[in-house]
Every structure is written in C-alpha cells, then in structure tokens.
Length: 252
Image 1 (cartoon, rainbow, N blue to C red):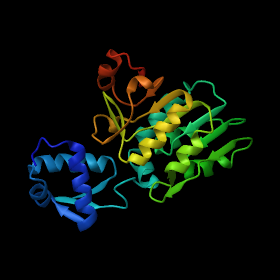
Image 2 (cartoon, one colour; image 1 turned 90 degrees about the vertical axis):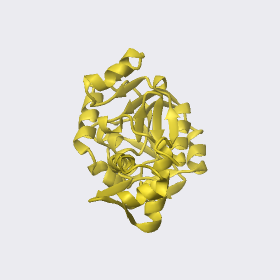
Image 3 (spheres, rainbow, N blue to C red; image 1 turned 180 degrees about the horizontal axis):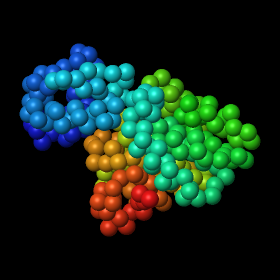
C-alpha cells in the first residue's frame, strides 16, 4: 500500500480498524496502512468532518456507526452552515404538490421552515416524518423497509420498491460528499435509495453545506448536471469552478 491509495479505500480500512480496536494512534494507523503519518492525519480530519470518527490527541476513536452517522450527531455538526444553506434555498423552491425528502440533517433544517399544507411528502427519514406528521393538512408517507437505527431512516429493497409506486414533482436531498464529478454517499444503501428516488421525481434540488466540498467517499449518487438547482453556503471562490461548467449552483 502507498500514499496514492484511493482516499475512499483508506477511509474503509481506517473505519474497519477502529471498529475492531475502538481506538488507534496516528502512528499505529500509518503502520497498518503503510502510508505517511501526514496522510493519516489528513484522512482523520476529513473523516471527523463527516462524523465517521472522533479525533483524539494523537489519533482517533470509533463512534456509533461508521456506516451511517446518527442523525442527531449530524444535526449538531456544522449546524450554522446547514441553517444558512436552508435559508438560501427556502425562497427558491419551485412549486410542487408531491415531494421526496431524504433523511439528511440539511433537508431537515429546510423542511422545518417550509409550508407543506395540502402537500404530500414521501420520505425515508423517520425524524422528518414524525415532525411533519404533526402539521395540519399535510400528508406524510414513510417508506417501509429496514430501519437503520444509527440514521433513523429506512433503506433496502422494500424502500426502493415502494418508491417505484410513486411519481413525484420534486426531490429535496443532500449528500455526504460533493465533488466536480458528482455527489457521493458513505453507504451503498443510501446511494441506492437516493438514486431510486431521483428516477421518480421531475425536478431535483440539492442542498450542500461548504463542509462537504471535495470530500472523498465511494458511492456516487448523481452527476451535478442532473440537479436543476444546487444551494450552498460555500464562498464565491468555491463555487466559481462549478458555475464555469454550467452547473446551476447558488450561494445567495
């Protein structure tokens, strides 16, 4: 192995090692992966941004589930950036009657501000479904399937098969990583359900805070051109390369 190993491969090896040993030092991981300590530190910093691990002095520890980070952890992480991203998007959402909303904490921040009266919401997010079901004259459909305790969401073939029964006006989603070649997720199951939902929706809107830019994860959901609009709190300099390629990305 070497420092030029794919980042996603190193993330997987680090996650597996921490899951087995609970904790590890930078030097320990450097020895296991046969990469430099600087590479390990960089990977651990990115993995902490994703909520995959918890950094410690000189290393990292395993937290909760490295496959899909707990929704409550994700809500707390970079909360101000997610709220700002939701604020940028709120007045620019196109008209819809039916909408799929994923279980992301960024979409939850947006959904809590939206008026869904006389609308139908389809979601795999348990917390989102519970919150919106308390609203008057709002129809909420929660996708059946295997419930992931760590993310309070459903996935698997039952959930994706259920999606095929619907035709929706709009999809609101986020992603775990945002790169020039597309959006990415940390698990195959999350990628599959978002891909299935995208096929059943007329329009697609992505919300992504600046902390997701240029992270490396293994499962690509969509190309950026597949989104009708992308909203972010990233700076002008961060989004300029995307705008130059014709991507409809907005930060204000």
